[in-house]
Length: 114
Length: 242
Ligand code: SF4
Ligand code: SF4
Ligand code: FES
Image (tube, rainbow over all chains, first blue to last red; front, top):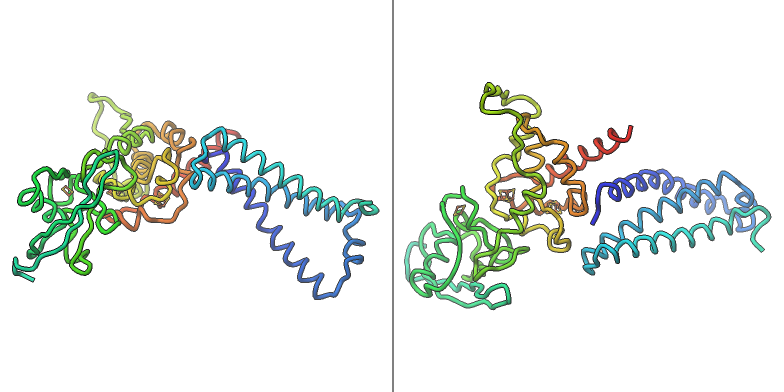
């Protein structure tokens, strides 16, 4: 249930994710070690185009990667057919994008989210 | 273990595509006995209605594969002493294929997938052309030779969990053949092959867990062939777009 397009999309999204994961871990460790408070962190992320791009890209890559992965599992373990799989892949992708974009917006929106 | 007075408990699957059950036979142990010898003994001495398949008995034809204690094996070259556990053996039809009767699995889906994967020779010359010289040491030929000794036994196909979960998956043997032909300089179908293995049931579904390579009785590595196809199809995908 993976043709070459989906296969390449999954590999490419993994390729994009790899440095972002490392960056994300490094930032987390830095923030905790440095004892930054939530307000200080938000002060740096709010209105930051760079952080919005960093985590926005992350969200898209994760959504693509996970949706295709779930598709494979749903086919091999639940035996879903081609149509149901496409629906599931798109729903998983859109839900993940929606949740991720909301989270990114919450920390990077200029002036904070009301 | 030379005496014929030692006996083994052999559970043999009896049934057809609708289902069945294991039946226990009491079989005399013999020297240098293979699993196929055990099956043949039962059919000749105990129950002539037992169905199974074999031809060469020397590991060349690929027709005798069965599940032995839950693992796929070529039975004509599997020694009983290697698989006997607590004096018992369990023998069943190959996994991932429909059962015709008893130990004979229906190989049709297996071979249909060979054709679907373009695992068929695409001639590049006519009978009027000179016979092409092939350098056995060339890099491409070495790659083709790596997978050429496949005997179509379907042991790898039976071992593959991806085939079990994804019935459209072309499977290790068909893809191994496709890769072999792709590397054969006499084959003119490389484009066709790459297209055939790029679809929904194609090489990209393989999880690279390697059961095929582990179980192939001829020591082939279909997983490696599939990795080659993945690389070749990806390269072709971007080449065609640029
Ligand atoms: S490596 Fe691929 S083809 Fe081989 S058994 Fe695993 S999934 Fe099947
Ligand atoms: S690759 Fe090996 S296990 Fe698979 S069909 Fe060929 S010989 Fe049998
Ligand atoms: S009978 Fe031919 S390979 Fe076993």
